[in-house]
Image (tube, rainbow, N blue to C red; front, side):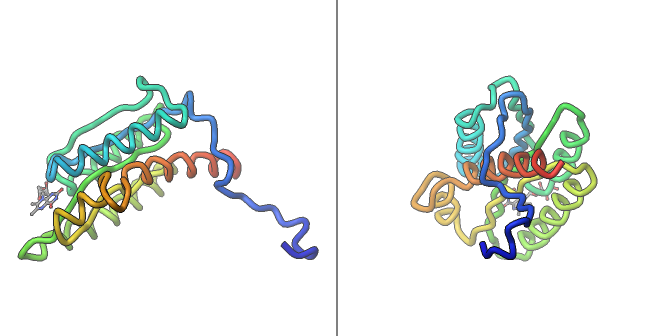
Length: 163
Ligand code: DLZ
């Protein structure tokens, strides 16, 4: 940082907040269960590892990723919920169905997030193949559920700092 920037107020996600009293909702799609369960486990383990208590992590199941948005809104509207992490896996098929789902879901999460002022995290994989999904659900590319949980924690820390 240059001397001219000395008085710059910087809000970062560097300091992780105390989440021991924070309450999270994990919404999990039942399509491609092998993948979504692994993502759920990664997210859950990360929340607990960073201080969340088991009773402060709620889980909701939805049939498919398209339904994540509405369930996310129901959870985000609860005053006791601080952040919602949405978990799904939409694998490319022979039709454009996946494109419609992915766009709707991404737009939906943004809408819920802005409407409620709470982090609504996009933990939805959009791979071409099931192997690509498994690679990102505890495989060679890590676990994106873990990353989704970290994102929720960091956003709560940023919110605390800004507010
Ligand atoms: C219909 C459908 C298809 C074809 N593929 C997936 C998928 O790969 N992943 C997923 O989570 N859901 C899929 N669905 C279901 C839709 O998300 C939704 O549940 C239905 O269209 C009913 O609204």
